[in-house]
Amino acid sequence: VQFEESGGGLVQPGGSLRLSCVSSDVNFSVHSMGWFRQAPGKQREWVASITPDSDRTKDTDSVKGRFTVSRDNAKNMVFLQMDSLKPEDTAVYYCNRASLGGSAYYTNWGQGTQVTVSL
Image (cartoon, rainbow, N blue to C red; front, side, top):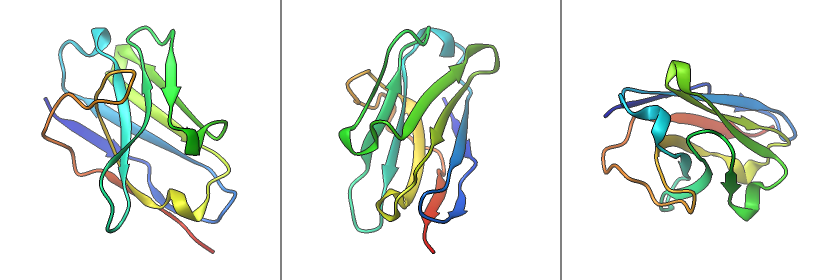
């Protein structure tokens, strides 16, 4: 299974970005999906997850109320809407099949998409 992330960029604090991820998983519609991020010098961390039919989402405390995860099963895609961005959100963002609790399923990762929040 492969993942391709896109939508990152440079944005000022308080701004917004919408990340997209397309998956090659033929069973995408029955798997929970998650977003993760890795800041320079830090370990990759879980950001948010969504169940297969979008009935439940969960996210880490640092992004609550600012980030929203969604998906389109017809297109094998998962999205991360990021609002009120902060400099500490700067990281490379990745998607992966993941549990609602944030455990990534695959050990192979896509290239990710860089998000930089700066003046």
